[in-house]
Image (tube, rainbow, N blue to C red; front, side, top):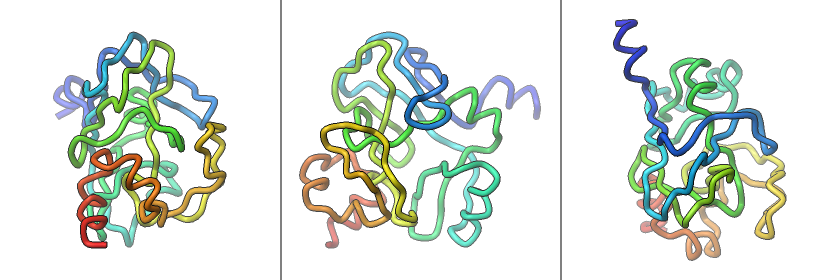
Length: 172
């Protein structure tokens, strides 16, 4: 099993990107060459953690993972995976978004050196309010588990929300 894990990670990152230290938070993901709008930049995987256990997981691994349903998150399996594949950090002016439940694509052309960032409003309802430090013109200063309900964000990002939240927005 170790040979399989060494060859195939639970997460995939485009060869046009790499993990490195981020000014936004901890380890981020950066373009090492230009990425075109619509190009796949990452596919997330890992293990499924019920919402009832997610805060315990976050105490160990930090606030990472993708909410895929009201009751479940998919999260990185190991610390090594986080460090080698990086984390897509939050920004109120994202350059990547969802194409399906676990795949991120470029929302616009991205230049070499840019950090690949998405808005946490794209995928999570189970989030304590957190101060934002993205510093962009669109910065909300704080983000919460209810930001996905903001009409302005729904209009601006539309199809880039996770399918989980797109279905909730459709019901709203």
